Amino acid sequence: MKQKRKDALQELLAKVEAHGSYETETDYDTVEVALSFTEHFKVMWVIEAWRDGSLDAALALHGAVLPGWQYGYDGIIAWVKMPGMRKRYSYGDPNGPAARAWLCAILQALVAECEP
Image (cartoon, rainbow, N blue to C red; front, side, top):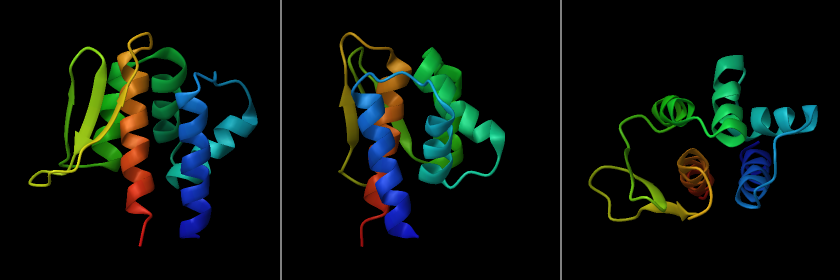
């Protein structure tokens, strides 16, 4: 199950990083598997951050999946990190919306959590 989730997270991250647009029911299913969400509103936060560039959705998602983690954005790079740790997960895109960069950083952290 953990490998299936990791694979789905990596697939989702690749789509978001490639500036792919959210288009189909298959994308919804990928989000659902990747994040193990059964609650529709959490899936929608991913979609709204990805498709619409919603910072509110990215913030809500961050709080739901990485509670207590720190985050930041410097105008190009969004990052997330566990308090007290040096490792940051970051993604930068000077031409993309901040919410998409933040979503990528969140997804990177979730992929790392799947590692043994």
